[in-house]
Image (cartoon, rainbow, N blue to C red; front, top):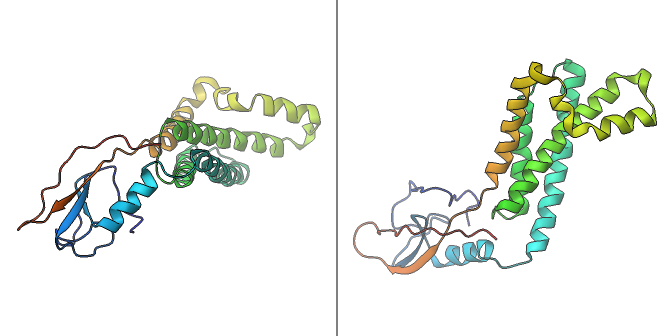
Length: 215
């Protein structure tokens, strides 16, 4: 099945109406409908398996944690490198970090989304951003390297973006948008598959009755 198929919005393929919106195979006698997209029986079954709650929810969440954490570490390293070598915060990087982490969490959840994955993505994004500040402070202050100094910056890590006060309002807003981006990318999919519907002459009329299919 085409992994690019989107159920979060109505989407009409450029292929003829009598073709499956996922695998593009012709629909000859019947079709299934998912958020105004026509599917063949095989693709409808696959969507049901992937989004219908089969499999271990714990396993999906653990996978989302692992992938999201990996993305947060990579994003943190890239952000810290920019701040260290460019000697500038470049807060816009936090938006890219939010997208990167949000995508990884979404992949780990098999595309389901939901409040648990949204919280996870937002938390990992903000953690990655704050960790980049901690690493930058540590590298740029070699004369203060000591266990006590490291513990102090780690302890205040989550507050670092706010310590500059009003001078960093724009930066804080951009960081907030990055966190929101990760949250938004893991919103639950609203999906209901109906059918089979018999194919009559002309394009099939696809019913639109979405329901929350997040797990």
